[in-house]
Image 1: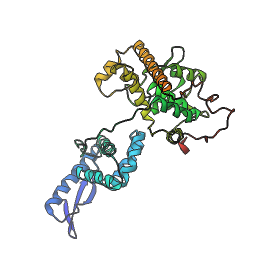
Image 2: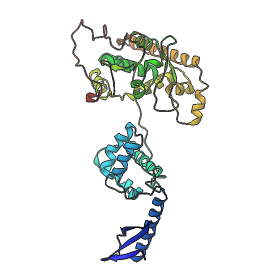
Image 3: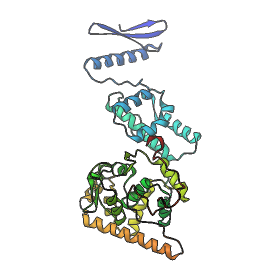
Image 4: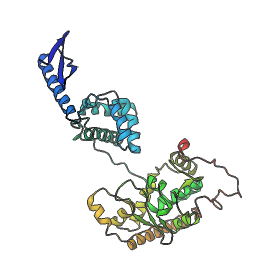
Length: 376
């Protein structure tokens, strides 16, 4: 008999290869204890055969630590853990359920004003961690596998005007101004820009190949230059290394410098990602077809989209960039005719600021900022 009572609680004793294993069932009920005993025997048998044994009693905090060490975490995983760990960290992963998730959603809304979109991203990360636990044999199944998420409301997204772009470029420091111009003229993501290398820039053909992308469809895509971007890159060309740097060092983040630039420019707040949105919108208003816009931006949300990319030839992309430049020039002319002043200028390089308000001929009134604060 494998069950014995110690006090009022049943204990399970199992012999495996001459070694006795003991485990408390935690109950005084004989029938429940027998179920725990059978499960204990199965776990020991699987362990003897080298099969991974689920560990539903593992704390979520321990799962997160293992994921960060072994699961190839990305930046957004770490960011979401800042919210998930304080709430789920002390819970066993086997007890995380939809009911607990509903309580978390209510907790997040009561804590401060957040959108359903933000909470959905948290829960998607949580579900991803649990799926990793299933793959590693720590969980038998993911309890959130078919969990429906709250339908998200689509907020209107403002598009940066040409006048606002001119103010933003005037207020930006030289290293950030170069990144902003590249974002507006290529539609590249922040991570793609900060990881872009000179080895993948073809100045002779006025063509850029994306070195590192968030999506598989965006990896290695080709983007023709605008005249402004070609002038910028030609003036600071290097044989190898990162394209955008700060005092010769890689730029890890631009959040602090971006917010300071928006404040100095005196325009409404935009996210840096809105520059990519502006690129797409300007192409659309210039009459560029959707398939070509997707190819330039590296969208890979579906298989049929990827199949379209292979049929978008380089001349079509060059024509799209030509239309973009023509549309921007038209907007500048309209801005001038309405009594505004066109303050946008040609940038000659990533390191030089002569003639743009940062030269030695006038007093510097803007403090120099490190991109990303202490993490730069």
